Amino acid sequence: MRPLVLLVTSLFLPGCIVFDKKSEAVTFHRFEAASAAASRPAPIIHVVRANLPASVRRPAVVLLAPEGEVLVDDGHRWTAPLDRLVAETIAQHVTRESGLPATTTVPDAPHFTLILECERFEVAATRRAALTVHYRFERADGSAVAGGTSACLEPMGELNATAFVAAQGRNLAKVGKAIAETLRGLPASQYPTR
Image (cartoon, rainbow, N blue to C red; front, side):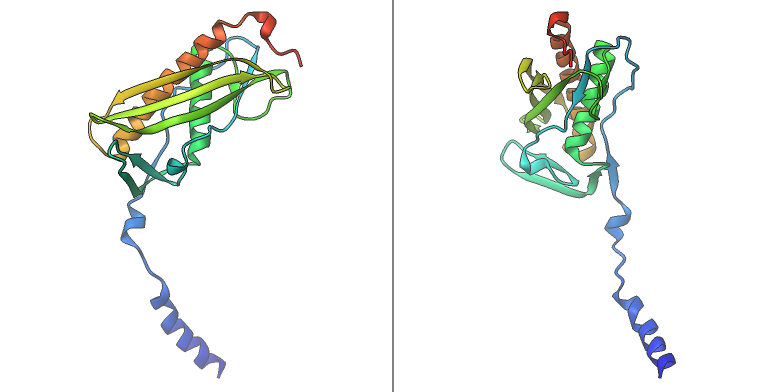
């Protein structure tokens, strides 16, 4: 009886497996950022995960068009959660632009915490990627030290996921530069000591 059950099961089970041709054609995206070594030891910058609009916090790349249209292409996905990718990319740009060590892991040494609030992460009119980030530096006690806003627009050659990711990568580089300029304006007396 057992051999008969195994034979019947083996004949019908393969019919339950569905091979989706779309899943084979998935493209994974991340933002490009040249890595750089810190040239100064302090202050250390701890970059926490970015707060993003709920509509883009998905595994797939989401294009929010200016007419309110939401384009989701499951054939284009992020290599990691988008909030983490944004934080990691900005950390790399901040290190390159400021020479200061920036990390997404909590350091043991005294450090600033960089809070990132993304207000816009979308496609603007005339086929441009729009990114608006409010940022602030906090001490360990939660007190704000400095901050600012960076609003960026980058042209997209086409209205698709690949062009959007590339344009937002350029926008993130601009945000990293603005954050580094804010850091350069801080006097050493503002640096964290514990």
